[in-house]
Length: 349
Image (cartoon, rainbow, N blue to C red):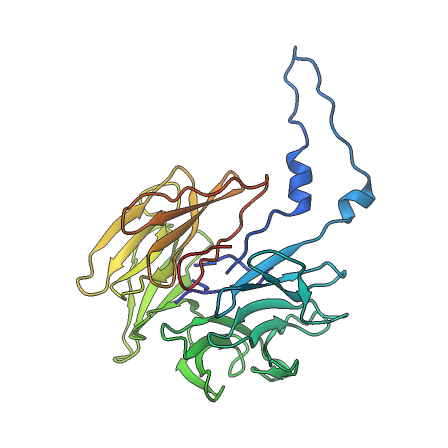
């Protein structure tokens, strides 16, 4: 399962799934054209200048979800001055606006697996209590997570795409419980009751394990926990002394490994994995930069890894069959902040 998160949230294995987008924002493009500071003795280069109107006249886009037939992509944009949901043909063409909010910024999450209904999210009046909404094919809206003080987040689809996971703080405003909702009846079923303030990481595709994160004494001190849904056993996979930051990322599609990031024994965050059957831990991917996230395509053919290289986002895709990196097409200057690979693993956005 892949966690997906809308704009404004941290990109995780942005498995969603789950949080995902390919965006080169106009503001970033403008910044990339500003010349660097000159060194002494070298002639000064002309610096292109912009008016405040030019800086403000930018359009942001985000989100990415392929339709079931992979002919259309959902995304959100503030083209109208506020974020709304749009669709655009994969082959190219004019985007079609699907929501028409004039007050609340509306962010897309995902198409339904078998039809063109889709899930999106927004809060009301800036109260930060975002709900999950279902847009029916006739345009009607359905609140999937009602409650005046409820805050909800989409966590990802199950492997068979017959249900999805989400979290809410409806029971206790301090903590987020994990629920599963089937496409057939749209009724929530509690999967994990969170009474210790854990952060959700991922659910294995066989539904036997949940990965959780827990912050310790500070932001540089955190652990990865594994919860067994059958036995209810909770195990700390990264016990340590001192400051070590570890966080859950994703299970592989075969539910054999839990991938996580950690800075144990080094300066930078790297990818490691825990063997669910043997308990063995091994390093998977290291670089002289922090790894922000890693996640798999639906069937596991590709693994995407996101690096933070001096505040610049760099995304790399590895073919798990060959072990080789996938060559990406030449893109405009700017940050590629996320990649969404289609369910068939033949397209990406």
